[in-house]
Length: 414
Ligand code: GDD
Ligand code: MN
Image (cartoon, rainbow, N blue to C red; front, side, top):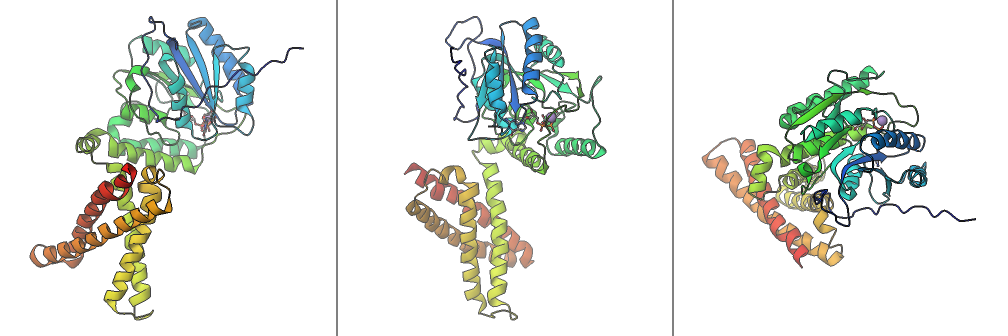
């Protein structure tokens, strides 16, 4: 009796999230370019995966036989979705399966799928049959008609959601409104920016490093891609038959993080910082860490110098409080703001060296802080608190820029 060897899974790309360009379809190469690659991100969809693969295959075999592929990207689902999908590969030759074990997340799963895809048109559809597969052909026609992006939308003619609770509708619309306020030039381009069901021309996002967070992959495509004309097709978001939604509060927080990151790195502000090579997202994190340092400094100063606590002399208390705050800031900056750099130099000697540099730079920053405070207070604004805020801003910029150039960057070169 012949043992059927499981068909091999796709290897997971390890490089940054960049979609490569492909040679035109009429040029034969080892990775033959095809028309369409559809990624199906899955997590615990073992009860749905066979149904959706069967329906998609029937639809696409009829419309573009042999010129498409389905790519299931599963994040090592506990219910074995990837194994079910792998067992379908013999029956569905255009099906490929990727099992991710080191990474998790809907939007990064989609991009990993697009990275190994061979299609000129890249698409994504949920694996739980809540996105009606029939709409796919209208989306494909939208791209073939010359649009760069074709989005299945719940908020145009023929669109809607099934029996969503008032809360879910409110949260979805509220999230969209927040996005319109923070990123009008991105979310304002489509009626359903929250959609997880769309097709995009590979050329619009090829070569761009994508930094998706959470669920909203369409924001990343609209925010960082070079998308011209857009088509929208109305669809009704169906009820789940099997399994359950993975949306939690975490996805809402990730959505806000995603909006802020796109705000800081795209549009006018993004171009400005890119032109000056100023890493605005990193500065944003550095400033946030600095805020925790102010809190630590105040707390230690209170514990040491307040008449109701140890009542130590003010200057000595301030020096100790300042040093504790610097230590606090170094820790957070090393594990968060500059994590991508410090993870490449994990040795304690390298970490100690970074800390000493950080310390010296921040002590110089403290000096600058005192100088600017006196200058502003005595000659410009005779309000000590406003003068102090201006002094803190100067010192933060100095601390960030010099640490970026000396502490984390130099050890990386070594
Ligand atoms: N690989 C992978 N990794 N897939 C995931 C993950 C993950 O961490 N989380 C969810 N998925 C898959 C699910 O298996 C499903 O196929 C799809 O992504 C959507 O996940 P759901 O948890 O069902 O999301 P939803 O139904 O609440 O919302 C979906 O539809 C909305 C309207 O289009 C999502 O696609 C939203 O992004 C979208 O706005
Ligand atoms: Mn769903």
